[in-house]
Length: 438
Image (cartoon, rainbow, N blue to C red; front, side):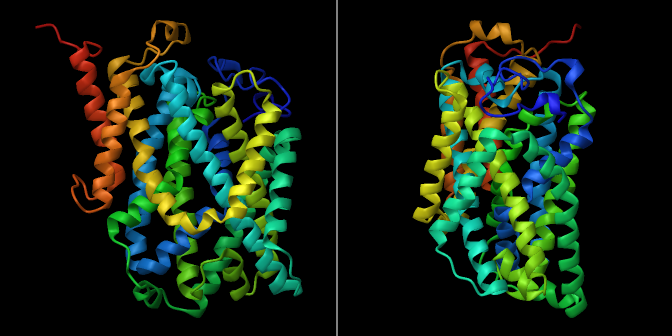
């Protein structure tokens, strides 16, 4: 995004520059490639590294090379549809959700999204501390308290979010080529020492294909749901689709596949351990700092923007500080031990939201999202909540192996939510299919 589109700091009113409650004007739109680079920069971080490593070590490269593209394709389709809605409506995710869930009901949905983004902040902060601790021990034989490192890293993120998000946005763009260069170097070294055939057959295979795909989806499903926050700045729908395809169809799967491959080769899950095993410890240390600092600043800022739509009377800077401190405490409490379960939970509870607002935009409101119409919306739209709860429950049964439509819980969640929301809306008279003249 251009500098004029990103607030200088969180002390600014969120109405200034980011158009949080209004359409982005045509004069401030940018090329889809710029948005794609920002999105890829945000995606390259420790949780993505761990996701690729866990899938590779659990399934081996033969199955990982199937589930990672499959999960990424699912995300790409979702991302493209969300990008089209964003490019046409020019509204944030949190404004778009109000049309389907109602003005007051959307606050609950936004709160769930906030908790999810908040969880990613805590997970990333925890992995950052663990990786820095291991890196300092391996490179300089220095030992520091894990909790202290987590706190220091989070403090840097909090201060940056309050005073300099614009600088971090630029840093994210600079980090993308550096991170990809490091990953390509890792893949080269791995293939130099082992044949691809050997890596294909390694893996303990305890994870089902459906669970593997759901883990890939859960790793960035929130990013797909909140795509409008970024793609509302693209010039048109084609640029939005370009950003989504480059992000979910190219960048994200490449990151996961490369990390899966080198993790299978080294037998290590931790990014710094992987880099150290390949002789790139110092490089990994620098990559880790830049990638995590950039991404977690984005997590904290996005979370604060969501909270701002709920707690409108609280200053933005206070939401940033409060969210950062609480997230740090959760990281210190050990949230990372639930990481894979966290991904699977996201894979079933978040997708219904996007399925509902897809149907609402394209079929119920027929692409007619105007901010002034929100005053005509109900405070709480029960069809959306019914669809959300039922779809999440259906997806949960799929994760337990009790019942499934597609064998992939995330897909079940979206399909059930979309179909149920459309059906209930039709019964209420909110949706009537267009009839062609005879």
